Amino acid sequence: MADLGIEAATRTLPLSGVHGGSSVVRLEPAAPAERISLRLAAADIVAMSAALGVDLPTKPKTSTCADGRTALWLGPDEWLVIADDMGEIGTGLTASAAKATVPHSATDVSHRNTAILVSGPGAATAINTGCPQDLSLNAFPVGACSRTIFGKVEIVLLRTAEDAFRVEVWRSFSDYAFGLLAEGARDAAF
Image 1 (tube, rainbow, N blue to C red):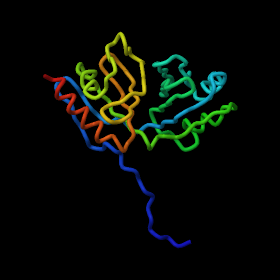
Image 2: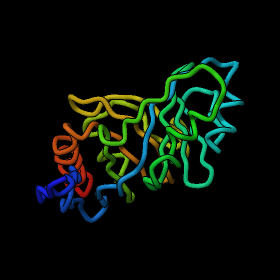
Image 3: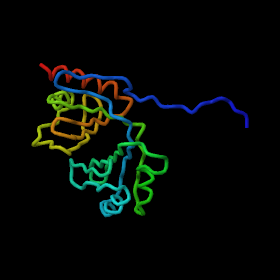
Image 4: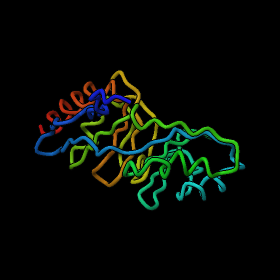
């Protein structure tokens, strides 16, 4: 076969090189991660949890973490599962889910989503610029997650520490979300 000199395409990260924040809020793009949108029946949660290596949470607004994997409860039969690294082909979340011998739907959404990390004492205030959800520690403790809105876009929000959040957003809306968060960060500093 003739060498056509064609190189493999590389995907540019949606928020590559952006930065923002204020004296009370730090904004940064999260590192690339593997993600699956997972659907399965309640009776099959134990088997799928074993295959994925992380217990799937069964209570609304909760998440669990194990060995670099985080499972977020989005609905009675729906989870977003995130792996900190992309791993090698065939060893990631989709491959792990395929090992479960229960009916399920595991869709790789790694390149659909990206994440913005929001931290600092003004993090909740910055997010509340576009999100009407109560982000007080009593209402939204560490580990809490939800699918909600931020401005005009849908996000999945995870509280990772008392003053830190992970904002999962579709990559096509990431510039908008980052810009609105940057405005909220500036407002939180006043």
